[in-house]
Length: 356
Ligand SMILES: NC(=O)c1ccc[n+]([C@@H]2O[C@H](COP(=O)([O-])OP(=O)(O)OC[C@H]3O[C@@H](n4cnc5c(N)ncnc54)[C@H](O)[C@@H]3O)[C@@H](O)[C@H]2O)c1
Ligand SMILES: O=C(O)C[C@H](O)C(=O)O
Image (cartoon, rainbow, N blue to C red; front, side, top):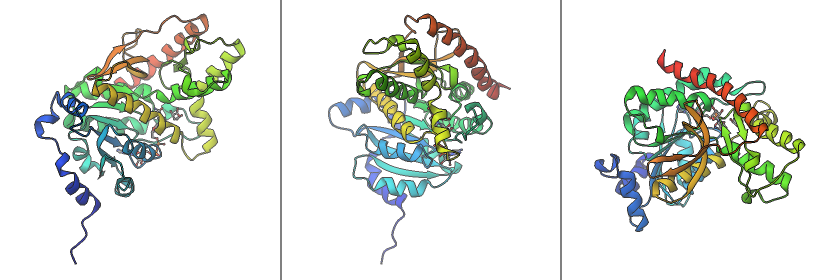
């Protein structure tokens, strides 16, 4: 009897025809593949998830395997990647799945990727702030971004690991050091704040959440999460009591889940949903779809801070336009000042982690 090849070997054989020529991994490859795709020729984009065996990583991997824009899905983790890969690879959807375990396989996981999604790192427990995760997650994000700079410097990066307000500046500094920084390609994922805001506002208004659009700006921690309720679509008015309730619930949505999970981690399922919604928007932008607009924490000139979350337009090169805040009411202006004060410190902490 012939020996049975391992999962990666079998997947590698099946998918050998999907490997793009080396030249396609360079600049312009995204455009060429997207153009092919529009004609029904090539099968889609190459996506890596770093931290794929985690609470977010697993459902995120499952949902990305279901995304028709994805042709190749690389699942990297320092533990359990083979099991998750074997499991996800049995789904009868188009994307070919490959698993990568441990630091020595990081480069293989990253080579040729169009989009890298990073949910690697430790989550909060009750009583902790997101900043309490800095000590561990800063180093993890640094190492992973060094790999990206080396192996897929043109990839779009979706950074989920907390504290996002500091990990995005860390990633930017790593890329600057490597000479590969493109601010249009680095995005901190704040989509869960928008998802929550849409849900909670819809509850108050008695609407279907799918019909509600709440811009959430600033950053991704406590008072830096600033919902702009004056700009809700469809246009709506709220009592001051509703504004206080909604702002507080949106700002503390993460803590609500951390406390409910009572030590077993933070939001994973709603986060995987939000991450896929955001990644799908990035892929549609890469494909060349018009009018793809989402909120994200990006390099920005909207305020005096170097990074800020606002609505951005996503396109073939990543963030193609960063929208301004629009008209704010007095309540939101006060919230903005508080958000900026806290954000400034978190951004500086991330920058100094790499520079000093
Ligand atoms: N941006 C957001 O809105 C948002 C929402 C929820 C959670 N998060 C953050 O996402 C992160 C992950 O949360 P989780 O619940 O999935 O945690 P988890 O502990 O369940 O999973 C994290 C995974 O990362 C892996 N990992 C650790 N070090 C790694 C490394 N060096 N390289 C690759 N993988 C590594 C772990 O093995 C684990 O599988 C946390 O920092 C959490 O705070 C962010
Ligand atoms: O709250 C957390 O620690 C996780 C995440 O940032 C969230 O908003 O759910």
